[in-house]
Length: 486
Ligand code: AMP
Image (cartoon, rainbow, N blue to C red; front, side):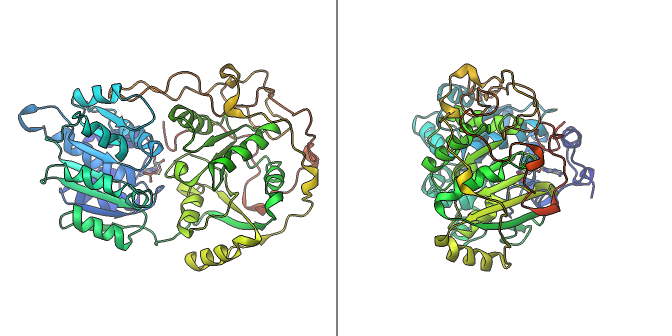
């Protein structure tokens, strides 16, 4: 079905086509018609399926074609999402689809100043995308007027439940006009989510894509059994493979994430971290640097990485095996999106075996075990600690960076300093301001002095552990950009 068949306003269809989309994804095909009819909808779909456009496009259609009562200005659509990263990502999508419309968008989330957000709310921004905590704060200060609200979207409702946001969501929904359209999106439909839908939605239509736990078909998955003390060495060993050029590493804890990042940075691998101990600006900068290709490895905790959409993540590494099968599915969904090739590698310690078996039952298939020939943990010495996030501000800029560092930096040269995390915003989007402190390339720009790498020459590079499933394109990769973007 072409996009034009959905009956969207020509200016919206134009923006969608300019974004490179040729036809709606299955969740869009199923969800857009009932949302356009004004019905409440429950969408069961994971991130990566195109669910954001499934709710944003009909909202834009409503705002572009129907004026507010008596031409008043104010918030007409509210999108609530669990994390700041997801809020920013949704905002990017809204701006992309609304580029030919005169609709104002604002974001509301914690960790940044309230001033611009309050100003945007006062100015009568039509679409507000918010995390629950900051929105509640601003509601408490009397800065939020829901009187014109027509549509509310609760995105990633299952994750909001996991993160303990449901009381906050209840308060928000309780403050909305009774007469409204409500859309709820969730990767899974648990009993708790069903209970919420009956509380917050009216005669909803349920649309669903994919099976409940369906790791992307295109992701090659395998596990490597490794003792705890050898995990860092194993990660370093894997990163000798240049085809691992855009790697999202999952750590169970923030402390663990920092430790991994320190080790990788000390060996010349451009690494940034994404977790809740980082300031909002650092998190946005880390994500931006990873998206731009400036940073090769992003080490994240589950919550921080939830819903992030980066085109061309080549590998997901479960440095710490996730105890919850759902988290595994979400994690590996970060790669192999939109049918890209991606590998998911899980480190499994003896203690993780029962969780691994539970996962295999959950996804209804076995995950191959891989033995790495030639991996000798003793070869990987610890280099001098260089914490990416602690480096002086100016050192983010690539200086004298070789086009192809020998020691595990990104195999391709990218376009220099990434943009700062902030972007101009008509709707009060907070400026992250300044030069990012997280992410980037170690200022030495190359080989660490005290950590000779065992396989530094290309002839000695190990085979990619995922076998022949990936094309040998190392070094030819362009900087990552928003998928299907212009
Ligand atoms: P989402 O599930 O909303 O996070 O979307 C995942 C990715 O799919 C984003 O990068 C979107 O830009 C992209 N996308 C959304 N709709 C389409 C479409 N109809 N065709 C191609 N890509 C799409």
